[in-house]
Length: 486
Image (cartoon, rainbow, N blue to C red; front, side):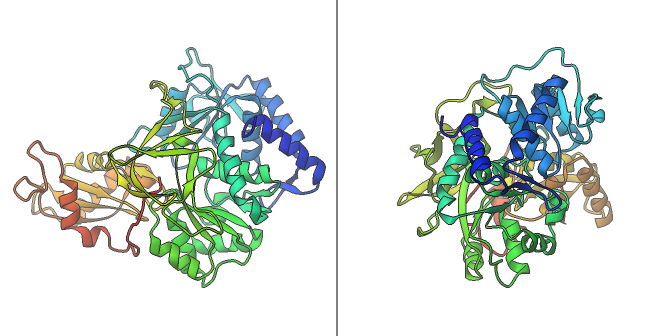
């Protein structure tokens, strides 16, 4: 079946015959050729079977090992659960319990109740009663968490590879031979676009550790290290979130000569950022997708005039509801973990319109903001942590397309000094993962019904507050937002 695990295996076998010495995986220290790849995957399949691993957390850094374990899990249809490095301990415990994980590959297993096995890479635990999964689930991708409890998106083995085949169809004419994974492989977009697509094409997936790419935690980035990696690997393609693109463009007077295709998504992408990148030679193409739709749904194509977030990929069907909500069919999720099965059409929560054949986005229904690093954050979650501190009476959190979240703080008493408020913010941050923490704050007047910043039942009127403090909230965000790319 096209776009299936079997189809990928057939292509890998063909690549092993046609180009056995071509590197399939390269982390900068080690390479695995297409001829060597089948045996490497088979060895890990046997280790998983010996350990009795059925629902497996993959908590490794980017690298060849991550890729080989993932391919082994995919080959056998075991349930793979990639673990984002930025998840807090509480979020990891939730992931383990809600998915009923019985095996863990990577550091941190003992603290989560897993025990060592004869295989040094696999820790296991006994699960007396497994939570039910949607029939056919082979992958659970957890969102970055719009609140303290991340949501599990259940996918079958067909959906990710259907998207991979669509993406390969789009980029195949470019003759891509090397892709550099700039995002963590636990991110579904990079898992598909940075591992499955290169292997489908017979290209090399370049997979250095994220620190070698300049990542510093979930929300920090050193463009100089990233540019050094680009020079070392000389990739033909990349996937970037907007903040990475902005940092790279600012740090480099011109784009690396090797690049042929740079997909940009994961958060809002400003038209002026895309224009400035193209002006200095970055071949950037905006796209749109959701984890619930196995990542990419729409993408601008090489050789076509850019428009919105591009046309739907070959596998996807997109329609607009009467109110403009974007709905998607094709390679969609089976359902959320622990919730009823999904329908044929996924309601995205995004609003849009058609610009010719391309989809243009107009905003989101929900109040969730997406940081410049592509992390989803529910402001009420952050505000709740802030207001739990005695020194803080009210708070509004904001981080849409920003590298660091900001907060407006109403002190519990007018005479509280900034040192007390700073200590309260620091205490709240200690209970949040780094992508949700407040990096900048300022005190402000109380939000009240009288100034139209609070409803009668105590809810923040966000639009009014955003309008009142717009200059400060958006300070340092050089490009006005033009679209939404979850």
